[in-house]
Length: 174
Image (cartoon, rainbow, N blue to C red; front, top):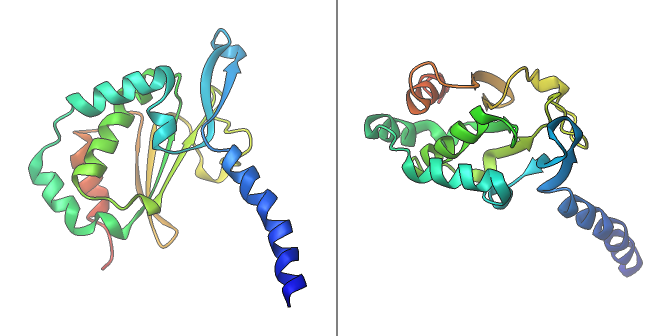
């Protein structure tokens, strides 16, 4: 029994280290004058770092979402999974991603149901296969429940981020 446990640890430990190394990966993008961009899975630390972090932080701080939608979102927001696909090089992502996270924070969203994926100009995430997400433009905010897509916000909101998000989250089945 002890041998099996040690064998499992030996096999799984490198896997955990490899997974940790793939978070917030940065590359120099030849299609963007070799500027550094984020690629693949990210977390908030990645969003808040580097050049993109400046955009993220300023938009997060400046944006004032409408309270009436925040209160409505609080009722259902934790019943959905959210995938954010963005380009750290993209002006729309630089504008919208920080704002979107302000809405999530204000509505008490549990980020255990959140995936953040950075892509290059060709909408590739390199080590992360995102073909099934059918990303055409960034940022794309995909809202799902039990694996079924309820809706998405692509590039910029139709009305406001919080209102568009509420219109999607309001489709949640309780």
